[in-house]
Length: 52
Image 1 (cartoon, helix red, strand yellow):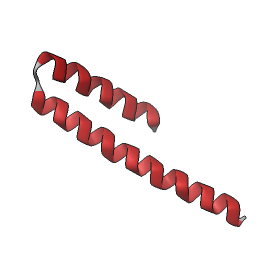
Image 2: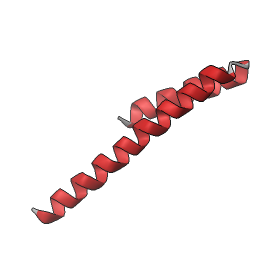
Image 3: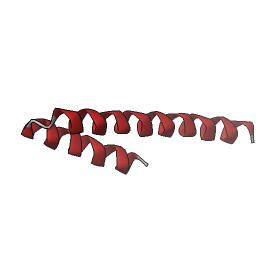
Image 4: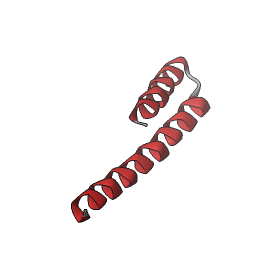
């Protein structure tokens, strides 16, 4: 899942460098959403591990 975040961040940086601000903003937004989903799943996994 973190690989997708890195891919979208690279796309955002590349698009921003070329001046495509709309695409860069969208890719950054997608990367943020995926990252926060990863964080929530990671914390849930840690909690379940410690409960078990």
